[in-house]
Image (cartoon, rainbow, N blue to C red; front, top):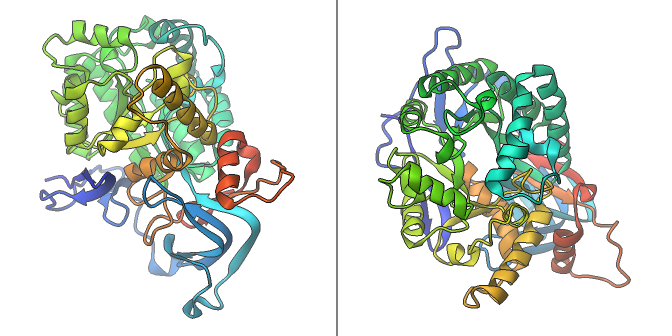
Length: 483
């Protein structure tokens, strides 16, 4: 039986546990590749394994960064170590300490001076092909915006040369940002999606990338011929991904949303998911018109999320990210909590497309798994500092105008969502606790000058509201310096 990972909620924290069904690894046998798709026990995540390297070729590296360290263990407060040491051992965090322990004297130490050292951020929801039309068509609501802007642009990615140019810009900007991990939508075009994966691999980012599935309710030029054709193209894409032997770039199933996928296609995607132990990403309860449309298309469903769950594509043995969740009702919230579905909160997109303000405070207090998404191009930037600020601002409006029982989010909480909260979808990522992936971003906030000394927390808060890629001095992924 395929090895599975479940997201369980204990005390409001998202943790990865192995299910009782652990009985071995699911092998993807292909005569051409002889590579396997497996669950990586150390990171609790899915990985297309490359051929095993000889032990002599594998580097084991121990070093430390010195500087002003800030991270979260829990969402309510920052952990701050002024001029502390962050020790990396074999790509993992060994420990954080105010003084370098005697046992580590003599290891290489890179002194970052007065700069801030924070965990690499995770973007749980971004559309790579939409990067080209950021900040355009912002006067439209979701469904009209898709027809007017999104679908015509995504159709251009049939042209491999255009895809290479456009995705090259996207990958370059993502590398400059504070984002280290991301879950990314491509288009229905397999070749273009492979090009995107190539570029992200070269950038050193840790990503999950999806070839989009769409077999209904989209223009002829951006609709796959049938459910079977869509499934066959997905399987062929997965074989090509296995051939590539990526180190850091993994596939994720990506049905665009229920209105664009027939029941037959969803059934076929579940078969593919089970065959390959893949995670899934999609959209949920973003817009009132969308929700009404889903009810028309799936009259048998109790609520929007149920239309995914009926096909086994809503958490549980199918690790799942659902973007938006602006209008999720009681039953949907309870189902997401029960199944361990991750919510990608996309505050700027929800505002730009007039979708609404998600009740994120409620989701956090009920112990759901919540991360942040930039949702380009509904959002205008890949900058997750901006997404943090927008999440706080949107929560203030909801508190003042809609529901004064849900207090506004704090800087600590949005930082947690952008780091450990979203990073949990990748396993142990997004924190500097022992045995977490050594993902670190070095922030030089010297540009944000101030006439008096500020505390480390105050500096971090200013970065949330004022920072962008210009503040990113360096960044690491799994102990590897990628910028």
